[in-house]
Length: 236
Image (cartoon, rainbow, N blue to C red; front, side, top):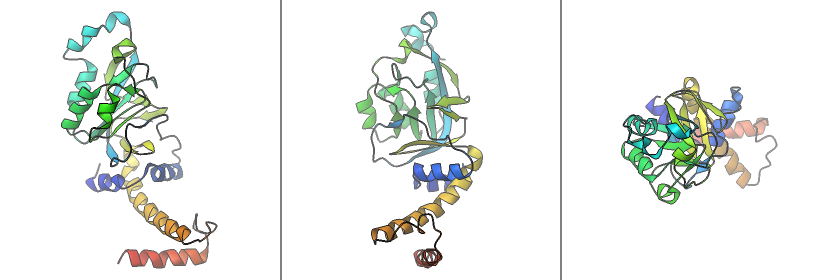
């Protein structure tokens, strides 16, 4: 991902991204049922680094499995690249935690951009207070070993009913998390800047009392001319 793309997406809302992807024919890129542990944090932007869970089988998933230095969950935390988002397929189940505060803190210290699960986190209050974007379905206390078994790292996964491929661009804000296919990320970022500018104009005019018909979407010739004049002043 270009650094300019990353910086633009940090200033772009997930609703704007959703609209732009819809225009490209991509209708199912918003991760369902996932929300930030705490709102008001800066946008999360990073390449997807994935972890997949499957239903646990008791004979393969005892508590001492964490002693294995090759345990996929621990490996994922230690190998997630700087600037990437660790995103997990937890089968949309928060009955067992996807991770806790120690692993999330380690990710933060290593320079990851954030963490996402369609399950839940334990120690959610601690994680919420970290200066680190974190998204989940709902808090969960039981260790993931009780129901989930970490299996694959950096493979295509499903998270909240969305296909996520390694390297896809993950953007999270107060509304939730969008998945941008890597091959259109630069285009989305460029178009987003234009769309955010247009919506700033619309908001200003609505606050002044102007009707939305002919303004949003921009179809009135008078509004089009007004926007071009407004934009020219802003770009000076």
